[in-house]
Amino acid sequence: MAGQIPEVYEVILPTGVKLLGVEYERVPWVSLTCMVKRGAEMDPPGKAGAADWAAEYLNLGTARRSQRQLAEDVESLGAQLQTRAEYDATYISLEGLAEDFPVLMEMLAEVVQTPGFPKEEFPLLKERRRAELAQVLDDPRELASRRFYRLFFGQAPYGQAVRGEPESLESLTLADLTSHYARDFAPPVTSLVVVGMVPRGRVEDEVRRWWEDWQGGGPPSPAYTTAPSHVAAPGIYLVDRPELTQSEIRLGHLGLPRHHPDFFPLRLVNYILGGGGFSSRLMTRIRSDLGLTYGIRSRFHFRRAPGPFTIATFTPAENTAQVIREIREVVRAVRENGVSAQELAEAQSYYVGHFPLGLETARNLANQVLNLDLHDLGLDYLSRYCEGIQGVTLEAARKAAYNHLQPDALVTLAVGPADKCRGALEEMGAVTVLKES
Image 1 (cartoon, rainbow, N blue to C red):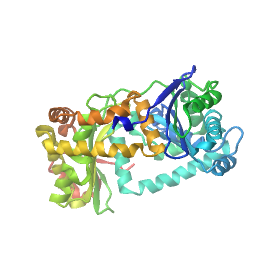
Image 2 (image 1 turned 120 degrees about the horizontal axis):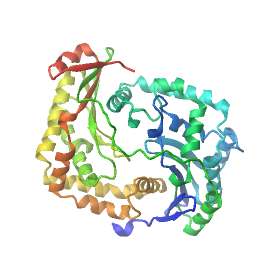
Image 3 (image 1 turned 90 degrees about the vertical axis):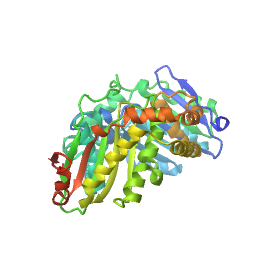
Image 4 (image 1 turned 45 degrees about the vertical axis):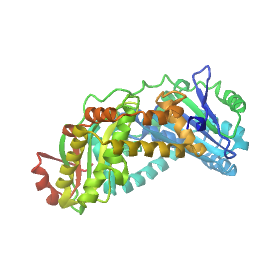
């Protein structure tokens, strides 16, 4: 496996901008991504969406090109320009033919370094986001997930939705977006990832040409790396949606940051618990044995700061309490008894077997490099990944499950008709009824 892993090279410019590149020879294509290591976690309270809206604005024109001209110029190259913010980082990506690399690098630099932030686009952006949010909140699954994170994290950074909340639609201004850009788009927290059929020397030359003199903004906000001082108290919470026939269920507790040394064993434990589809314990118990759902999944959201551990499922409303009870029992069993040797071997086989798929395209490989850079995993991380997975012992998995699964700390949210599920829920303990918004 190690011989198949491409080499990642690194160059750091005097301003702090970092270049990470891979010479990818399979197809004459190139993927360029500018990653600013600040994202939606920097949104001020009540200003959810600021980072992501600012990212979209980079797609709406530059100091010398209108939105239409920029779109036409990208299209004329057969290229793709995408901008988005996530928690912990903002991404501006441009992909196209390797022969157009110099033009693509110049265009990426222009988009990032000289955005136009046209005033006339802000009302249109707000209307697009309003329509999107209305559609999202009409979906019980999306509503439940958003409501759970807001409940769990409160005013902490990971509690606000990346793309915005209902109240932020009215409170966000263009000044909020330009302020975010001016502060956090700074060379010391910016990395350029270039993966494609372009020699290293040529990549370095173009990066120095277009990025060496960029001073950017700053000083950037301090990185968000610590656990929140307060999260929701364990218990059962209910959002009454009388028109629904099913309940959306979310359970979770605080998880771990990506750099935690138990990442590998806990990833395998979670695969066995609820991340492994039909082979997982939760799917076997809740769907196969009891027939109470079509799908259930658990996940540790590994971020720069401790993210949430979540379990998500749905069931006919009258089964809500039973499903929650069964989930708790499965989590407790994995914590107390660990996993079997066969389960661990199957999880290891899955991750090792699927690892090459993440290296098959320039875009997938770029995503791998972005991840290792964002979390400071080391340039040799890709060559160490399979060894890290295969090196997890049964005892290490058992300890990870015991130390990091917390069935008594679970915060449980049900979104469904109270008249069909509240009584049974109250038999399990006190139920806190929440407003929908």
